[in-house]
Length: 299
Length: 331
Image 1 (cartoon, chains in turn blue, yellow):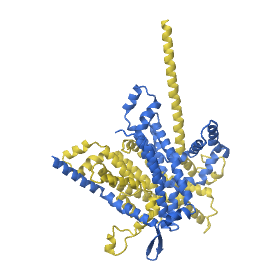
Image 2 (cartoon, one colour):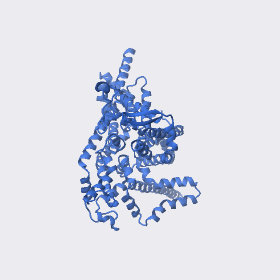
Image 3 (cartoon, one colour):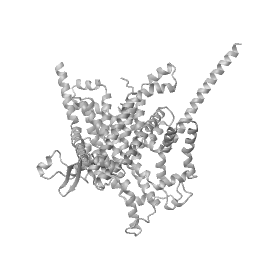
Image 4 (cartoon, helix red, strand yellow):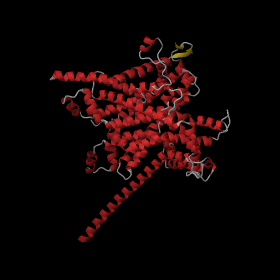
């Protein structure tokens, strides 16, 4: 009995390796080797010669050049990092809120869900980038809020004044009003996150809520004591997704690509992307350690 | 005495009922406002594009026209279709997105199943590497990837036989096939993750019952596990298709002048400008083109580019949303 069991496991293991083979080859060929190569590039001076490329090891000069010589690298990097730090909490909060909203029963829920997930298919990559710089759209937008400037200023200015007068912290107020102004960006980037949260909400067993109701918990309490802990692992998943999703829309991408293929500074471009990667890793690590302390695992 | 007490009790009941009704009603109202508001924000750009696309050129300067065009016309569409070979671009994009979708689905399902059910020594370590591939920005390996496809060679085998340093695959569709066939395409790590989570959620008993009935591992996977994994498959297919459709990073990297929808959208302004310039008889200068008119045309093209996706989404949406809810996307 024990022997057959073992062979079955062995057979499974062998099949497992076979199933993994395409991925494994791909990983080595298309990921591990290129990433090693990229590290080498970032430490070298690359030059195009008649018989291909020549590479001289120059240590950390490229990294230094990115920070000290490149005209816009520092600014773009800070912007990308700040953008990430500012947007991630907003997107997480908004998507959690929308998911709870969409999880309730009401008429027209199917339609509401269909609309809320539309950004999943529309808001990735090129289309968003094109939208931002469109003249006609901007003109129509400002023409739409009829009184022109006064109207569009009003929208968050009034809110800001009200909140500051009510004694709220100024930096928090400006963060919130900023969020209101960028509502389109936030909404269009939280499609997948809403989806993930909604899936999580659906998987919470209704018996938990029933028990809480019998014990006399209000809806508010039920949210914080049941819903929130149960989907807290997903907050982590969503943070990671949001961060990697920002790669494609970041200005950094354009800069790295241009440095490589417009000005042909391959070494510099690799160094830039490594710095970017390190920054992201640090952000992710901090977020991970902050969140994982609060995360609750059911099993 | 008695009836009065009874009366007050019903009054209390009624007022409690009234407050509950009121809060319920208020919440419904707030919810409605929020839902409508957010839906409006999401739909606004699309509605705007539709409105722009059907407008005539003279409506642009007419102050009374904001949303509904006064001179309803299809000229914009006609002109855009003249500049761009829309059917060809559409066919290319559909074939490419569909092809990579199927390849990615196969390889990711295999890998996900292996990570979930066919464990061997070190497979957990390999899974950590999968997560690592998700986290590394694709730009980090951009230059080596380009170099790789420029002189494509599998561990030096091709050079050994032909004596040349690999094959140039830049400008062909091979990089897409290779990368998705080897599960290293766009965000492919995420798909492996989805499949693994899903297969992990399928009870062991089902698998064991299949083995008891004499099915081999491959048969179990194909006949028992895959039919159960339809939600995960649908989710992965939709994501793979849509992300490939919208991608500009990889397609501009490996194709020289991509005839793909997303790339066309990104570069269309210049093309339309030069088309209009030659139409008007100007050979070199494109400065005289009205930027508003140009923008109107590129909006029309964007609408045309997203139209197939939206149509597909509205057919697949119901199924898709249900599937995602049943997928193991949940950690």
